[in-house]
Image 1 (tube, helix red, strand yellow):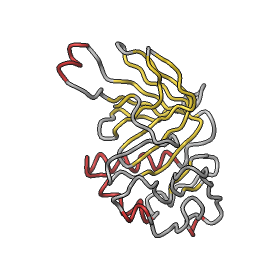
Image 2 (tube, one colour):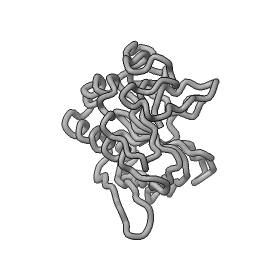
Image 3 (cartoon, one colour):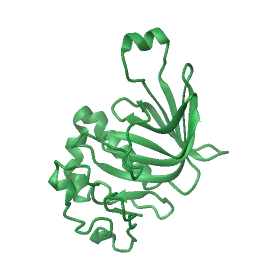
Image 4 (tube, one colour):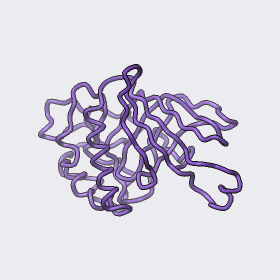
Length: 223
């Protein structure tokens, strides 16, 4: 895990692995993560799923446990005991655990344990997000650190998430990648989207594509 990973100026997570691709984003998510020694961080904001990570970005960062809580990254290969919960009372949520990253001896001396996290879906369904999440997790379990490279052709062609559309789920599916993937020409200009942030996949023409702000480059995606 990583507390407060670097964000781009438009608030989108910064990634440095050319093989890592954005899959889906979900706004208005309630997130919490806690560890007995460090404490608890919680906020409302956006959840980003990539081929390698779960990112949370707080909508309104606040000081918590003596630091400003901006964002949190969970590597998919490190996450375990992930489970989607549907309580009788309360909202559906995705929970799990992730170990801390750092010097193992120092972490042991400090007594820092694994972090427990929870993403709560207070608004809308999960019929789009969950199948995509469990599909990438299936690839991670099968291919480990090579999962992102294995699914990249499907992601860039639009076939990876094409079948998962739930009208009650307000998640946003990326159909082209942000411009951070500078060394990957295919990610910059995927075949299914020729106008960044404006043209939806042809087979999803009934959906409206979301227009990015003038000073951002969030890639193309469908609402």
